[in-house]
Image (cartoon, rainbow over all chains, first blue to last red; front, side, top):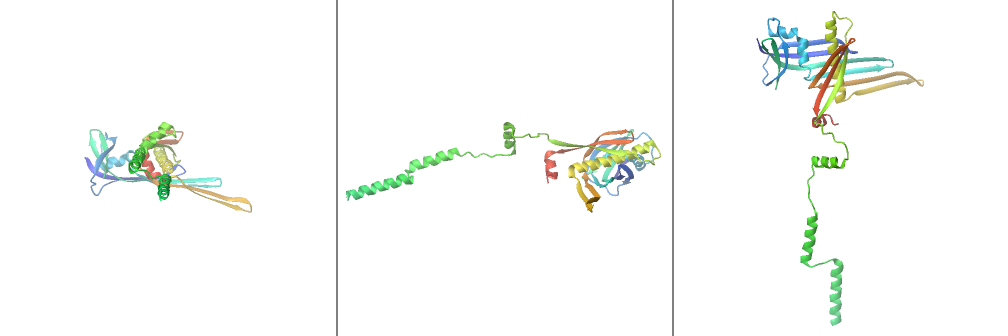
Length: 114
Length: 169
C-alpha cells in the first residue's frame, strides 16, 4: 500500500473569526508529477484501514495541517460602518501533489515539487 | 638694429613667462606627478558598509533573515456537536486569521473610506480594509486553546535581499 499520488486542496471561509465554511479535499492524482520528493510529516497509522485514500480522508485535518506552509491564497474584507463592524476571510490552499509511504505504524507524507 | 633685436628677445621671454611655457623635459615631469596623485579605486557595497560601520554613520542590520511573526485568533462556533469539533473549527478559523495578518504585514492593507456629512452633521461613515495575496513557507510555531479562543502563532522567514526584491515598492 502507498506510493500513489494524491492532490490536496483546502478552503476556509470565516466571518467575524468564526468558521462558516470549511472544505478539505483529497483525491487521487490522474497524472504522475515528475519532480523532487520532499518529506513533509509523519502520521500515526496504527489502526486498520482498507486503502490509502480512506486513511487520508479519516485524517484530513492532520494532512491539511502538514501542508499549511505551502502556498495559500487569501482574500480578506473588513468593513466598519459607524458602530458596526464586519469581517470575512477566504483562504484557499492551492493544490499540492503528495504521496504517502507506509512503514510499520507510520505514514510518511512527501510533497512532490517540480 | 641691436636695440630692435634686444627688445624682440625681451618681449619673447616675457611672453613665454606669462604664458607658462616651459622646456619639454620639465612639462612631462609635471604631468607624471599629476598622474601619480590620481588613485583609481573601485568601491562596492561592502566597502561602503565597512566605511559606514567604522564611521558609525548609521545602524546596519547584518541579520541575514527577517522574521515576520503573527498571532491568529479563532472562535469556536455555537452550533457544534462536540467540544472536539469546536476545537477543530476554531483552529481552522485561527489559521485563516493568521494568514490574513501575515498578508497584511507583507503586502499591506488597501483602505477605502467614505464619510457622508449632511446639514453639517455626520450621517454615515464607512471604512473598508482589504488584503489579498498568496502566502508561502509560513510555519506554525505554536498552537493553544483557552477560554473558547484558539491561538495560532505563525512565522515567516525571508532573507533581506529577497524581501527587498519582492516587496520594495
